[in-house]
Length: 407
Image 1 (cartoon, rainbow, N blue to C red):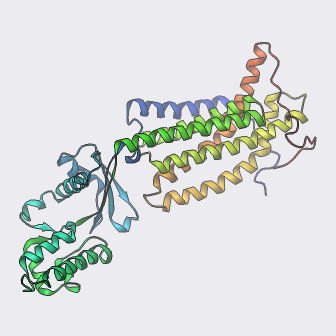
Image 2: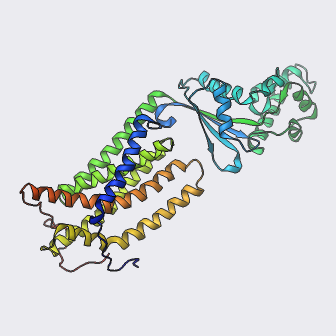
Image 3: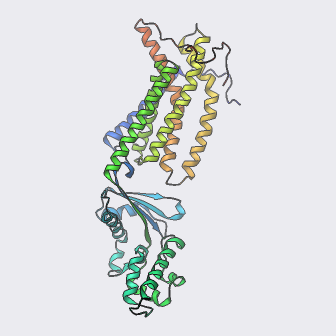
């Protein structure tokens, strides 16, 4: 199957347009990383506390951020989490201590910030949506609404009732009760009436609290950087051995170009870079490299077949010959990651966004960046009076057929 047959597009003739396009987006990304948003690292890398909040209604992230900022919790990040129908938010704080006290501190600060003005109206009462089974059990033991007295039956009875209340809230009601009366399905009416005296129902519940320590974040940053550098070095070595060293240099520069624009896009849009985003960047480096190798392989074949032609003409012909294959593979892959971006939810949003940008830029750079680097290098050598570097097949590297092969 082919989209294009016998195309004759002068890609190298448009190299200055391609260069301008790349410079605009690369420089914009660098400026944003240096002077505007910086590199927006996620909690995975900078350390901090993640608080998962479930609402009884559709939350407004901007309003929640204002409440948190007003409570004195600076540099917090608020974003939607999971499917929109679940009414969940993920709040990232800069609290980096890794103790149990830090977990409770982060949870307490968020609860106080989100309760806001409602806290004064419910002064002296506890929030049932954010109370633990131990808190509920201790209250029931103290009030003894079932009149069990201080006998051995009271403690396990109230503990079981408190755990049933928490399980009903978290498992059946999704973490948020709408009314204390709902507990009549799992608790005695006298216990429910007693809870109404000292508890109130907020419109949110803290589902989970996680902490990533600063040392762990620093180690992850180092490992992510090393993984990216190792992948680029491996690519350079492979292409230098399989083709010629200039092919490896061109491929590495192309991969660096793709990575810079992708990271720059995250900085411009102030999107956090997490571990999943690093995985996506490594994936797009491999994907871009694959497309680049296809073009390079056709150039290498045509250099041997068309010895008398100018290298620029050979490169143009090679790109046109592989254009249909490039559009087919890149197009199908792009549709897949686009669906992931649109319907994959907040958890995969950063990962899929990096792939969407990366596939577009990676396909573009294989045509507009990698191949022109080869021609520019050969022209530079010619201007200096040096012999052009040999580009035919290496001995033993594959069949040296003189027949034109279609992709």
